[in-house]
Length: 320
Ligand code: TXA
Ligand code: MG
Picture 1 (cartoon, rainbow, N blue to C red):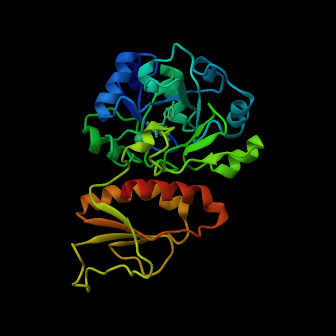
Picture 2: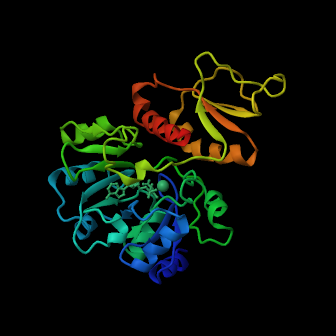
Picture 3: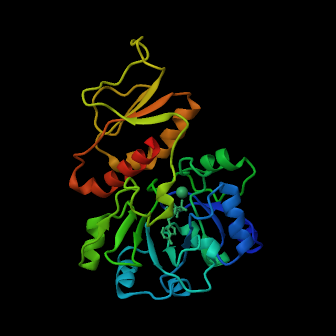
């Protein structure tokens, strides 16, 4: 079933495929023309490096100059899965892939179709399969929205997690999470038995960005995104005539008011909120909403903390 896609990849083409996080835009990580095509298609700045997707922990040694004991411990604990590790790169890794950095990002995705594709075509670079600046795709339709109906997509419905992998920089100490994700700080600290840092999401512009991607605006729909004010109630377009500037899609983490067309309540299910966030952003645009307003959730329960942190990060980035 994947033969056609493997053929495209082996001949330098680009294919979208599912991972457990979001759909990726795959190309042969060792073919410079193929990698260049990915940047062109996405409209991605050349200094924003790509993640190399592998199909075993052993393959990491082909890209990383040294796979440290800590890296190995994390691979054992979380691979295959939504954790990307930044390690010093081997000299032969393409500069195009790493945006000229001396490090490389590596991840072994958990999705079986991603794994089959990589075992057929070799290691793949795979940024999220969206045009630069758009929300990441969690469904095949999202990929087609950005790249057209004829674009080759390995179809597997909605992705399970819905937010991009945790990016952890192991290339210098203290280790730092550059992009929060489903695998959280505490889990990583437990696996390593050491403390790591959570990089503030690029807000501190005086510090040089350790992850070039974090300095770009991201994940944003055309509608504007904002946090709801304390005490603000979701407006009801059926009864409120004083809706400033038009219509709003509300995303609430708890059930405050009965669900209606412009109100989605997640009833404490942060996993579902994460899975749906980018689809809701795209929905807001399709349905012509002017804005998406999200109720802040500073008190998410401990068990939901990593995903709530990742959600907070992506929503803040969409706000800009
Ligand atoms: O879940 C994911 O990671 C998805 C799926 C498809 O695997 N991929 C993904 O790729 O989100 P992308 O390109 O959209 O995001 C990669 C992030 C960017 O923020 C980039 O700057 C950062 O990883 N990154 C890549 N290589 C890096 C490096 N050597 N040093 C620091 N940050 C790096
Ligand atoms: Mg992306």
